[in-house]
Image (cartoon, rainbow, N blue to C red):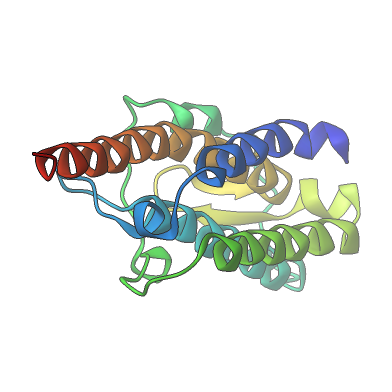
Length: 177
């Protein structure tokens, strides 16, 4: 299991470290240049992980699931990769605390691990799930995809955290006489 989740664990740890020192105000604050707040980025990650786990679970029950070759999914972690968010993984504008989002991340990861543990290697290699860009991708690769997806958003999260901290610092300094 460590082979499949090793990189995912490292990336998740970095995400949690990035948000750890933020106030809830900073965590929910939108960057001044637009884009998602740190909370929205992390919420999107939890939503995506749950969606992937749900889809894998459904496909494991599909007797007609296709066996396909591995796809070059690692390219999706590149900042050059043009990605888009699917509607059901779009984050909300609802204010959440860091502890709330950590719990969501914990639940989504446990769900994904449960799905992985419920299947055999043969099933995960012998069935596939459709990706909007890559077409059908072997189920085993979807566990890696979650890590690549989070790695991509880690860069975005770093920028958003820097932005909200800079914005807060600027506002604080402008109120000093």
